[in-house]
Length: 256
Image 1 (cartoon, rainbow, N blue to C red):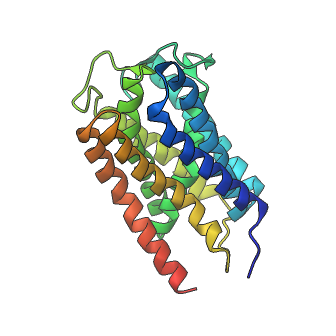
Image 2: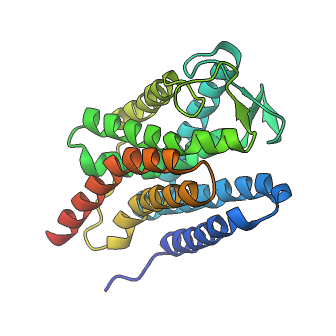
């Protein structure tokens, strides 16, 4: 049997710490929520990079995270100052430090979800175009859970409101558009995507991060945060991508 590689061990460790942190999150005092939010992003980002590193090498992992960070930062700066592509919104001073009105932790959050969303796209899509479309959809589905929670924490505001928990629907179109730019470019330029022959853990880690987020966001909203409307919406939105990806992964592993 092939031994587990060190990046996989690191990814599993960080995922375990992430799960423990997120389980503790609703129980901490209000004064701890912002530091805990930042810690959650950093643990998730570390697990995501380690998972990509384990499957496809350090260059792949760091390039994908770096591109996602840059695309996320530029789109957020544009959104804050022009309203494009997400509509009119603004960050509060809750998260620091900030660059051009955007907390640095925000593009790091784009980077943390890039690999899990891309792996979902890889599993469901059969061509570069369909992989990019599915990955962009998976990323957008995550925001169905994320945005109401962050508004509730006072991290950003939508001054003009919107039909979904005070959030305009054009925001999600913006997320999909930015995600498609990110993953469309990645689908065209990546050259070293790895398909390990006997390392099941390498294939599982990325989708596992997405599935845990799907389950965790659903339960957290239902029990602690924004309630059953957001819990139901995020369960459906992320489940549309999580379930087919896991079924496809199961089929692939069965035929190895």
